[in-house]
Length: 194
Ligand SMILES: C[S@@+](CC[C@H](N)C(=O)[O-])C[C@H]1O[C@@H](n2cnc3c(N)ncnc32)[C@H](O)[C@@H]1O
Image (tube, rainbow, N blue to C red; front, top):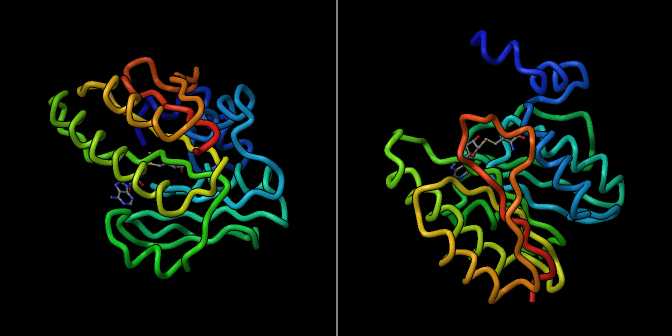
């Protein structure tokens, strides 16, 4: 663990509250601002390891809802019965078949590509992931549902936002305070799938 991580106030707070990652505070801020997820929702979380989004989503949706996570890496199991996790690649149809074909009220993506440090390469990978999330929304998001998509800089964001605006009634960019100052990431909050 780096000195930087141990000194970060969000890292410490996540540890105190039993969350598996500091990322949870980005979702918490977005949720407070946009009310993305509602009690009783079924939420699909793409790029879910180690699982702090899932822990937070599980609390919001309660026992009538569910938090379903997919990641390339195995996610340690949770005590909460409304959390289910799957190991798989979001580009591979196998994992959706395993989950069972159904539509979700919300799809969240905190997917992060392996970064190279070269902005246009990393941006290109982030765009590929974002376009795949859009495809997953087409197949598995309910009409009227919401989506959250993390993006990295290095590509023409306007084109992606343009595509998203054809599919959602509202698309807003958000950069929560918990994002490290050194990171260029931000989130697109997409409300009301058409
Ligand atoms: C920043 S982490 C997610 C943290 C998570 N939101 C949390 O709160 O614990 C990004 C994740 O995206 C996953 N990922 C990247 N590409 C993927 C892909 N093609 N399919 C599935 N997961 C992927 C990585 O394995 C990594 O665990």
